[in-house]
Length: 537
Image (cartoon, rainbow, N blue to C red; front, side, top):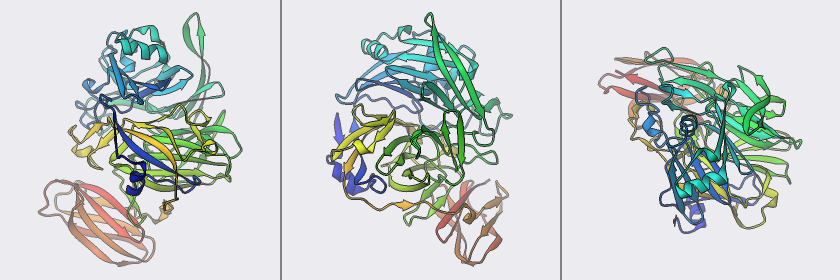
C-alpha cells in the first residue's frame, strides 16, 4: 500500500481541502491511499467490523447510460462481496452467486438503503435486474447481515446464507432513500419504487417504466420470532409536496436544543422541472419541519459526507465532498447556474449555529470530479457524539484520522449524460484518508445569492435548425454578456455585451454553420452566471 502525496501539509498548500471557518483551529485534509485490488464500486452498501470493511452490491461502472437497452445492464451489477483492511492494504473477495436467488438478487442491486447496528448490517430495497422476474425491479426485501460471519466467509471464499436473514415486505420496496436508526426505531427517509428500464424520455416511451416516489418518512422496528424476521410498529408521515425526494444526503444531526434527529438535504427532483430541491427537511421522532429559510446550492445529490458537532459553540457541521450539483462557485466567488446538473469538484460546509440558522460555504475542491454515490467510512477510533457524528470537542491531537472516502463515480467531464457511451466515467477505486489537522484558518467562499436575481433563461425553439431565440430577465442595472458555448466550453457565438436595466429581454442568435450537437447559452452579469442547454440539429 503506497501513499500518494508524501506530506499532509503538501495537500494543504495545494488547496485540495482545507477547512477552518466554523471548526475552531482544525482543517480537514485528504490524503490519497493506494490499495492494490480495491474494487471500483458506486452506489454500494458497506459494513465494518474490527477495522475491516465489507462491500456489497452497487455498480462496477460509472454513470448509467441514457438508452434503455444500455442502462443498468446486468453485467454492471456487483455480484462479488469484498473485505478490505485499510491498515494492511489486504483485500479478499468471494462470489455471491451460490446464494439463494432472493438473497443474491437483492445483494447485487444498487442504491440500497443500509445501516449498521453493532455487528449487524441491515440492507433494504435496491434497484437492479431480477432474473426471477425477467425485468429491472426495486426489491421488497430487508436483509440482516452478520458482518463478522460474512467477513470470515469471504476470507475463506465460501459465502453461504448462514450470514444472512431476509424478509419480504412491500413497504421495504425502496431505492435511493436513506435508512437511519434512532431511539430503537428504523427510519426510511425519501426514495422511490422504480420498476422497469430507465428511460430519460419518460415512462410512456420505449419499454416504459413505473416510478413512484415514497413521499414519506417511514418508521418501524424489526422483531424476531423463532428465527424469522418481521416488521413491527410501522408508522409513516406522508407529504407529497416536501418529501418528494430521492438520491439525497440525509445526515444525522444534533439540533440546537440537544434533540438528535436527521436533516434531509436537497435531493431530486422538483415537480415543475428536473432540477434539485434547494430547501431541507429536519426530522425528529414523530415529526418533521421544512426549512425554507435555507437554500443548499452546492452538492445536491448523494455524496460522501461527514457530520460533526461542536458542543462548545452548540453548532452542527456537515461537510459534503464533490458529487453532482446544479450550482458551483467560480474563482471570484460568483454562483454559476447549470440546470444540466453536472458533476462537480466542490467541497462544501453547511453549519447550523446555536440559533438554528444555517449557512453554506465552499471550503475546497476534490482532486477530480469525484464523490457522487461515494461513502464516508468513520474510523473506529474517531470520537463520536452519537453514531456517525464526530465529537469535535473530544479532538485533542494536532492530527487525527477520522475516516475514509471510498468508491463513487469519477467523471472525465462535468456534463456527460447526453454523450455518455460508458467511457466518460468509471466506478472509482480511489481511497482517501480524511484527517482533522490543527492549522491556520483559510479563506472560504460564502454562498448567499438571492434566487430572485436569477436570469430565468429560456431558449427556443429547442432543438433549433436556424436562429435561436434567447429570453431572460435582468433584475437591476447590470453589464450583461451573452454567449453561446459548445459542449467543451468554447465560445462559438458572442451574442450581446451591453449594459441593461431591469426588464425581460429577447435576442436572436445566428446558429447557421454550427455543427449539430449540444450547446449552451451563457449569460453573465454582476455576481451571477447562468447557462441553458439547447441542441442544434
